[in-house]
View (cartoon, rainbow, N blue to C red):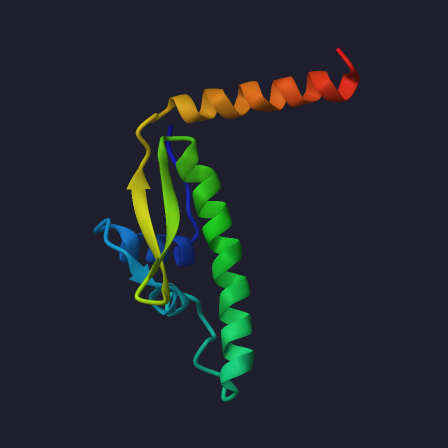
Length: 109
């Protein structure tokens, strides 16, 4: 299965490729247009939203091949780490089964 990522997502994955935790600001640096902000609060809000959207998309794709990006708090800093899941590709099957069961319950079967 070939996974396709946007350029921003590829940059984020390159940062996370070593498997070590990285502060969220390192991922924010992968997002274009963050240099134009003068207000720190606006920059943080913009970067956080954009990074969260990209991370959600990346995680969805990685889960299909038994990988994930986890969030950790290290020394009061929010960090992200790329990991391989112990259950590997079986995660996809577990998700399909859970969705199927939820649909059955919703239909009253």
